[in-house]
Image 1 (tube, rainbow, N blue to C red):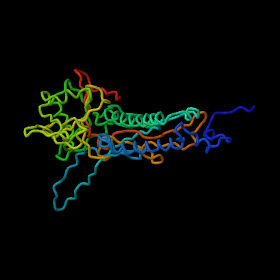
Image 2: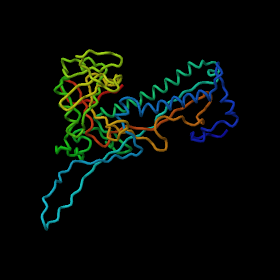
Image 3: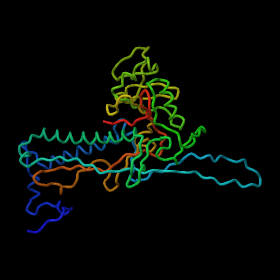
Image 4: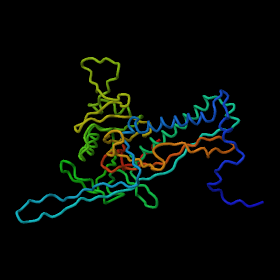
Length: 367
């Protein structure tokens, strides 16, 4: 008998005596076929992919690109000269720096034996599909929030710290200096948007909002808070200028002190500061004693703080791998995606805060 070497891609082919048409006809107890189940998976993926780019909060946090590089201006002090009759002005130029975006392959499979499919109830398989869609949505949200709150740089290929965080005081790239603000404020490479405070206070929030406003980001701002800390942020003793939202279908009295907000089901309310309104959205993914601020410029706007890299050959979101993944003794529906999250071209659009009595900012674990 011949010795077989390592498995390679040709081994993915179906055995010659398998009749794929017959396999597709494997029917559930209620008469549905494997083809119909796969069609359901495809429908679920279409809904999922659409929700990733249109859903609340994350579509305003993230932008998408299909290339590895991000390039952006850094602060320089060129200035202007007074013109004279015979002198020639000195030519001056801007300066840029840049970083890379990571990308990784991910997959999620559904698999059933033929005997199981013949006996299975449709409700059981629908639950399997919903579970897969939930896993893929969770992963997208986890990775997006992780990159926003992560202070460390990450490797891209063989280059360490090629994917950088928000402005981190020059720890990952001393060449980065935030550009001069529209009102002429200048910054150093030591400018840092990862902060630690002793307690949550209105005064600290005001200071942190100013960290965005001084770079030209105008209100309203997005304030990410942990669901476990909602009581702290909606306490009008701590935040006297907190306004609960006006809920649709509720009639309020003349003296009601509520905030009329779009998307009220998506926000816990608003806090007014000297630099504008912060709209609160809470997530159980963020652990207690953290919060984050950023300016959302709208659906997938490139000025949003987080950048999602995709492979142009694969496309955006999750796709069904072709049927050559069907392999005995299981019938499989394999979903595949390639993406990664980095920071966008404006590293000033985000402030991450850790609440602790002492020490420095520590990146949270996003659940």
